[in-house]
Image 1 (cartoon, rainbow, N blue to C red):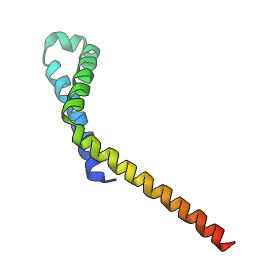
Image 2 (image 1 turned 60 degrees about the vertical axis):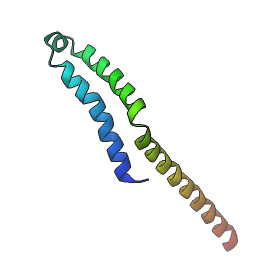
Image 3 (image 1 turned 90 degrees about the vertical axis):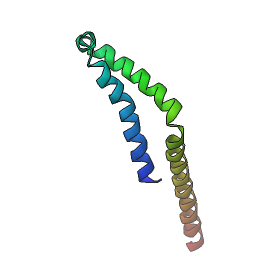
Image 4 (image 1 turned 180 degrees about the vertical axis):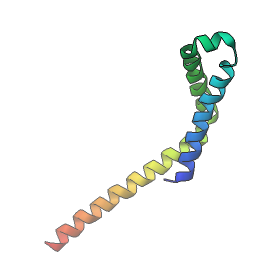
Length: 86
């Protein structure tokens, strides 16, 4: 997995939450109901990430799948090496 793609995706997801939350906290009524601002910001952030962050998510997911495949093939190689040694 490319660490850069994971960091970029994580930072963009945080920004998708923090920017709407910060904007809503500028309104006096939302300061009083900060928990409602957090819920709305989470929904907005989820929506934005589903629409605009598809490519970074695909990069992270494909990196994880590739890493898992390499790990499984390495485990089979070790098992075959042990069988061959005995």
